[in-house]
Length: 271
Image 1 (tube, rainbow, N blue to C red):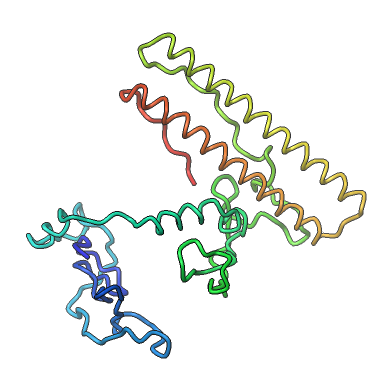
Image 2 (image 1 turned 90 degrees about the horizontal axis):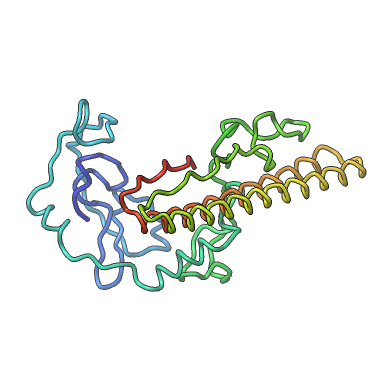
């Protein structure tokens, strides 16, 4: 599998190739020396000694001061420039199906996905789908207040946590494009202003709806558990809205960049 920059990642990746297994006639064979597999279920296994004369210094970069000094061999360079097959259609469809499934987004499942793996591409609802048995790292959206839990023991939102649209950072108005064509600049600027105005309206509409939720829950004299459940739902709505707005803005910026390749790209938002 080629040159890994001389970086020791473990689990069969020791910087030069992969020592954890190989493909043969459509089947993958696991090296049980570096992989933990259940041999009562998986029978395509073998034992091969892995590299042992490796110095682990926890450096994870090649080159530069303090970095690993390793270079690929001519054979490894030849592999890097060899013909590589693109993903098969089933793999691409699997990615698209996962991307459009709201339940698989961390902002929706809060780090607890409903499934861990599928036997067939895109078969997320198939009986053969393997359910997730453990949650991953607790999900906290990137941004202000992301480093702390968003709720207190009483169920109230912590100060600084992004729960509602009003908690999101203020959006900057779009800057005038400069493609060199005044008419095209005016067209793109109008499109940017329209998108900005619509996204602001959607933020305000979601905020009003969430405010009404709070008023309704207040009339019911809800307990802390009900309040926290409501705030979690509001957080999901807010993050999903922000993700959609980011994607819309990125698509618009891509169109503008295609019209004027010389224009610098804006810095990416932290995720």
